Length: 477
Image (cartoon, rainbow, N blue to C red; front, top):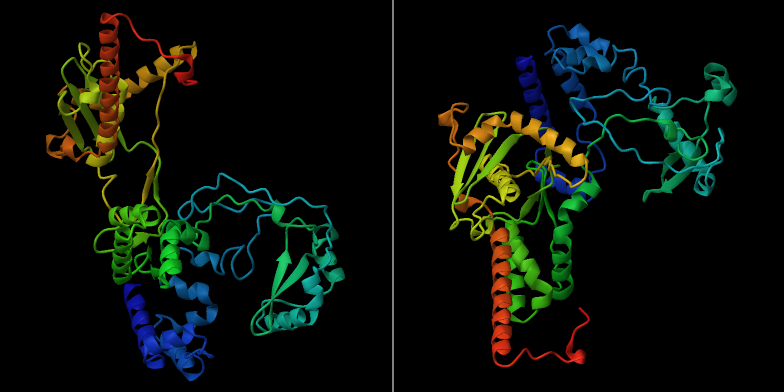
């Protein structure tokens, strides 16, 4: 199989280079609409077919169709081409009578279904105005499809006799005019005939299209539009199909950052500062491209963590289920002051410490590492209440704790259940806790300001009583 694939590739490569000697010129011709015919038609294509058939172990197999040919490549989908009962040669079900079968190796399960428009049922619908207006062009298009054996002419009475009158549907048609004067037929399988309404998909089809590309570049759109409208320059997007990335080239990205910095010096701060900070922080210095890939979704448990809080220390621990890697981080009041209270230590902060252990695990096991593709994983939080359900939740949490003995042992420095060679060396300084630190500092500033205000009031009371504020000076709060 490998030899056949390599020989086929070499043959195709040789033919392409012979028919398209200048790939760059051919690409420009294709984009600008100047390539009016395929460069592979005629003798080159027939020669290619003849030589390719000679590569097959049994050239006679080529006459049996594509299904037999791909069998030489051990293609797992070869049966669905011609051999299966519902094949591409005989036709496949649309999912009207029975749901379409699942393909779990390719697509995830579809969990949400969009409700289609409701309409009165009519098995024979009338064409839209555009379909009536361009009926001649539509018929010409169907004649072309008939020549290609994609359609065949018949009569309504014949179809009713063959399939049953209750199963025959005639959908309304519309037509879209193309620049060359031809038309694109549109069949409305939703309204009146209600065929689409009965189709049930079990697979979530994931084919990146315009909406996915738009979602990726939405953060860049306003920046580029602002530059285009104010400076008179236009910046186009760059798409890397080989890396599945989209953005702008390095040269244009550097020019954009330079333009924004120059605009800042000219006091265009309101318009550009946020974008400059975003560009400098979001993109790497050597690239202005972002991944257009769908996030890699991970379901189920990936790691387990725990935290042990005492009067003078906090120990964070966790382990990865798939690899057995583990970590332990010991914290004191100096490194994590927000977990300690005067006279109470950190014993009150078990919930916060466990969330902090989850953040450490994300860093230790590589979930926050820079990568070309995004990642998505589930995070489950268990919370207790003060009603009777708390009893059942406590039982559930007790069961979870019994299943989390490894992480619990790690926080207690018991390492008999883990491989010491698989310890991950992670420092707390490498954990992105700047948001937590800034919030804690803001709270400390507030506490100091409140204490200072209390001191002023106490001083005023010692000097002859507190001076009450006038009613008109009080705020509504």
